[in-house]
Image 1 (tube, one colour):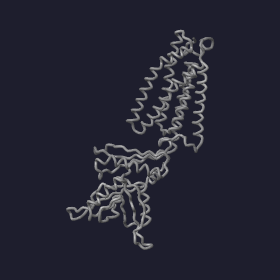
Image 2 (cartoon, rainbow, N blue to C red):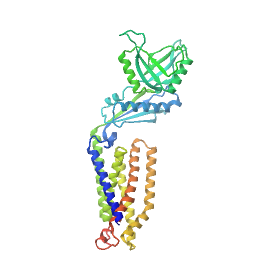
Image 3 (cartoon, rainbow, N blue to C red):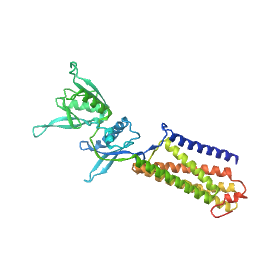
Image 4 (tube, helix red, strand yellow):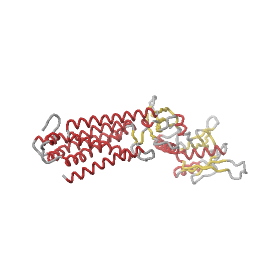
Length: 434
């Protein structure tokens, strides 16, 4: 019994420390372990963009969409928006075609106009070859060389220009794939015009004199030094590989988010209180231990959510509340098996040991099936479902530890060998007195 009492004290101390960690980190406004709140709790803006893939080959669409997501993520991060979420999806349009969309969540930004401004109008850069048409005119044919291959941009001034009359130029550098493509284009099209388009507007149309190796191009257009600097800044923030159009926007105010947090906390408190009262009223001493183990389970879950960190959403809070009942379900199985052993005449300590052993397979299989269900939800679900599934799976794992380890240690540390006197009442359940 001494060994179990040492472990019980250690478990109790660990629970107190976890609870203190949760409280202290949330009380400190500068703590890096404060809860990370999702858009529906912290308030913020969601922007939905449609990616224009009309000029992109079907084989390149997936790569262009991934590059677009990376560019927008970099752009949002540079503006210091806390915990942004940028996702891509394919949706069916009314015409029956498939649309590629970009969903941008900006927690803390509740002004839609400010959100659009923070995202910025990152330019679309592409190079097109001039080709003759049947109407004796010319148009520019896409080359496949776009801003997705861009690595950096810098400002320089045309050589030989006198002071005050320097012509601003923008020097762009491509990655290895872009450098190879640029060299191929210039080598195969000597003597042709190569149009440089920014947001579908022609800004320069130099004539290709020779093959240009090295992956460097110079953009010279009719723009001022200020415009050139802005262009360099925007290109370094990330030139969009494909054009995007804002389809819809919505915002969640901080008041609504605060109401969702208050409702979630209230539901968790009421749920915990009702479960604890039922367990104590029906199972007496084992019920008290179950309530204590449940409190430690909550402290462990909240600490894990802070430490990982897991972005907490309303659906995540729902998942946490649901796992409260599941955490107690394992204790119910254990206590019922223990009660059966007591009725057979086993001593309290032996009844606890056998009760845990008999309940083990049911607890293991039940938790395993719930974990599998949660993983499937996380794998196939949308972002809202994934938030629920992640907290749900973490909660199932924590409840497994709480029921199998913590409750067992506390019971074996307290129950005596003989079931006499007050212990007959404390170890009984329901309406039974012995």
